[in-house]
Image 1: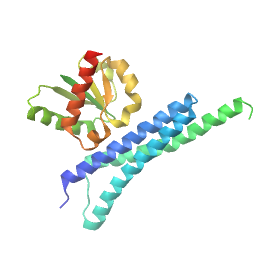
Image 2: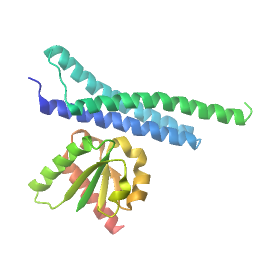
Image 3: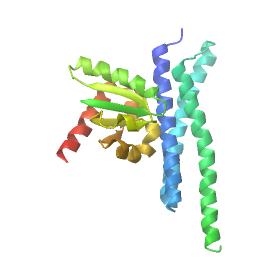
Image 4: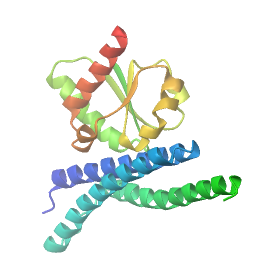
Length: 111
Length: 102
């Protein structure tokens, strides 16, 4: 039997850490817009740490499903996976944006 | 005390809300708690004493504070991850107390 309580607890961890990472990435973009690249870099780092944590909780569930051969699905877990995917996409786009901001600044300085 | 909980879709905060309500009943505290998504917050202005947000929208705290005009803070990461109603309730009380004194 799937332990519903335990799964909900792990889903909450995923939502929390993926969500924290998402916030960090957005803060990193905001810092870059103000040309504070050092602060931007530190937000990206904190975001990555949090995102890694979210993935490790996700992996835990995947392993359990593989071991028990029982599907583990709930709306909350779907929501958690949604947060993971959302954060991943956002991270990719934000990293591109930050690069573009840096390029633009370099162009303005004639480098 | 009237507490507003905000997260992206209102889903994970609903989970925390029910835990907070349980904790309030257990401790004989009189609170009103609502969980809403981060849209149309203008309608919530003036209805609550204090606001806690989920980690997904830490970046939006400043704009939420301006919209609502009440103390706003993010729920501590561990508290949110464990959906710890008791600690979230304590955090809301502390946030309100700090603001009344300041």
